[in-house]
Amino acid sequence: MTDDADESTDSILPEPLRTVTPLTGPHHDESMDVIGWGVFLGLLVLLMPLLPFILIVWLISKVTEAVAPSN
Image (cartoon, rainbow, N blue to C red; front, side, top):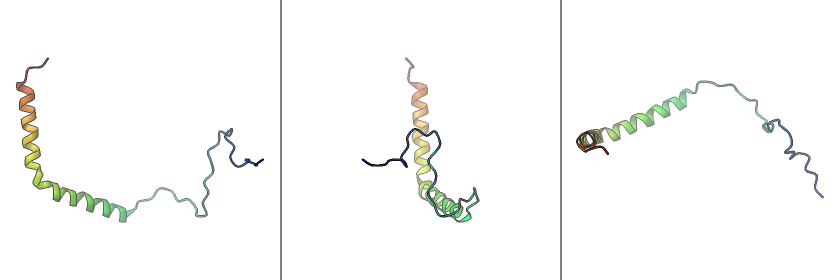
């Protein structure tokens, strides 16, 4: 027989965190902000040449939606 005292499923309390480092509160992370903005600007530069084609497809879909009879 095994002793499963640590794995009690009857408790309504959340399971405690098992960590040796102290928890820190929310804080502003400037290095991740720089990485996020870099990824955003990189995608913007890569997708900017596609913007006219996306606009044309969107306009065509709006025109065909307005012309097509609705059921």
